[in-house]
Image 1 (cartoon, rainbow, N blue to C red):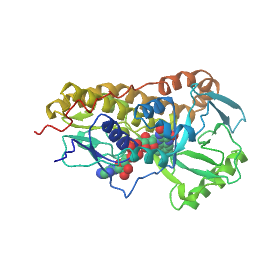
Image 2: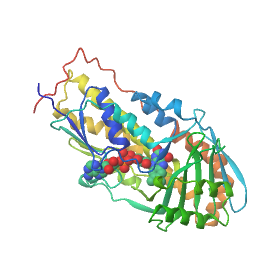
Image 3: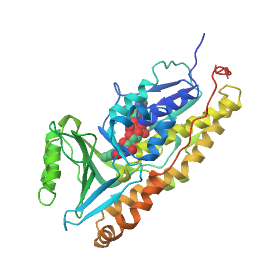
Image 4: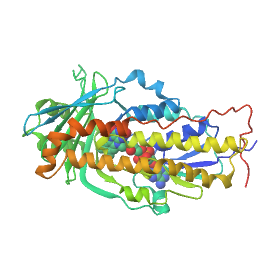
Length: 380
Ligand SMILES: Cc1cc2nc3c(=O)[nH]c(=O)nc-3n(C[C@H](O)[C@H](O)[C@H](O)COP(=O)(O)OP(=O)(O)OC[C@H]3O[C@@H](n4cnc5c(N)ncnc54)[C@H](O)[C@@H]3O)c2cc1C
């Protein structure tokens, strides 16, 4: 029997693997092309909010993670210049910080019997510097003027932190979130400068920038960094109008994840949005298969891609905008921005913003009865 791959996915990051799992669930095999050797888990850890957990649930993999990671339902933001501490409340389901590798492996495990051959759909899940996005002619990325160092901190005897903590001064933002009793994910976002080089140098640079004002508990976390986990990234985004007016699909080709909507990490939702993309795309392709008696009909795929793009465009543009504005407010370079941040952002604005971003259900995948359908692909 000849097997055919109907879908080729470029990139085995969160978006690529999750999309392949979503398609697998609706009976479509996808060939995932990845340029790195093995799974690339740069960034080490990431925080997922309820919208992302609902997407993982729809993909049928949330049960693999939920027992491992405790949710945080609140965090604390310290203005290190004034010492003022504000509470940040997350939606009642909480947010969880998890190992990126664990997420990627759980998705990859679902794909073990993938087999390939020919493609009728091309999905660009190739990240922030996507060649597929460039081919579609999407607006170039913009540098937010900030960059981030992030890594894991390991405390073999336990760290004792239960909540997410953020620290802000006039121009820098730092923080950490517990993954479990022994590990914390931490970050340091600075304006402009590039913090590159060897891991030791990155760690030293962060410590030097922080020593004057940042509390000793944060410095202690950075000193406990697992150096192999350290990475640096310039914070890039695609302007929202490039998403609203851009050609996000052309015929049978489209994009998902950072390839579509790279955003600054100020609301920790790039990964979550990638999982949402995967479920929505899986649903549209699944519905097309159901409507076509179990077949992937190439002629129907352009419309299917179009429907997926219509559903995602505004949410993606909103996420990019909300993340950017949240970052501008948190790391303002003007006195009045910092004034608003300290007086209004966390007290009034953050709750509203987090409901808009975190409390979102991307829906379920269609239930397809494989027994009743011929899922072999129709040839052109
Ligand atoms: C500092 C920072 C902190 C963040 N924190 C969070 C967080 O807490 N929560 C959250 O949800 N998100 C967070 N994000 C965002 C999140 O990391 C991304 O949104 C997410 O990784 C996007 O997944 P992706 O699969 O689209 O892209 P990627 O993870 O970049 O994966 C793309 C894959 O495509 C491969 N690839 C690229 N080009 C090609 C090619 N030509 N051929 C084949 N393969 C190719 C790459 O090797 C890679 O494996 C953060 C981002 C940054 C920078």
